[in-house]
Image 1 (cartoon, one colour):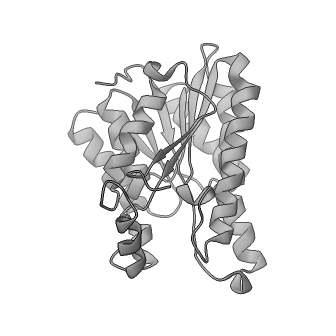
Image 2 (cartoon, rainbow, N blue to C red):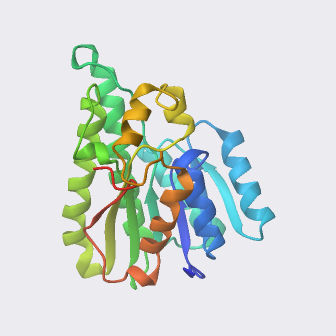
Length: 249
């Protein structure tokens, strides 16, 4: 089993869905986990309660990752609680699917502020905290970055930018022993995909029919891959984009 004892991990957007599953998996492997949330305090507190009930250590810290002051406070509070982090999971994200004619300036700014600027700001703060022995940064992207579906232009473009950021920073930060990788989930049943009507839709059926493993994903399918990348078992892995999608590309 993956051992993350001695690790301190910050997981952004961890109040529900994939982020919550990642936080719980990292804690189960021995990491101290900071559960970041933007608006869902109830969800974040629930994630923390599940972790502590099972003997893990976690705290919830509010912060909008698209705001530099919030990200700075997130890292300061995390460091006070658990010590310097050495794992960062950039999971917080936003997505709205719409025809290109309906994309607004406001929606563009929100998508890129959360999905691209947010990880960039978090990585900048992480670099101030990570020890000289290095650390691991895992960005949560999407298979849509390479194979977008109709009406996903804005979301897919933001995730494509995140993929490129990953590759660039893997080269830049490698000499500092900091690994940077991307995990790209396929269709996954979360509160978000239920909210936009994907779960239970004809689009879901089409995705499942095109998936070699024959089902929709669950958050628990994504979390083990993130735990691997956070661990010493992946010390020779950087600059990679790993699809966790049941074979759908």
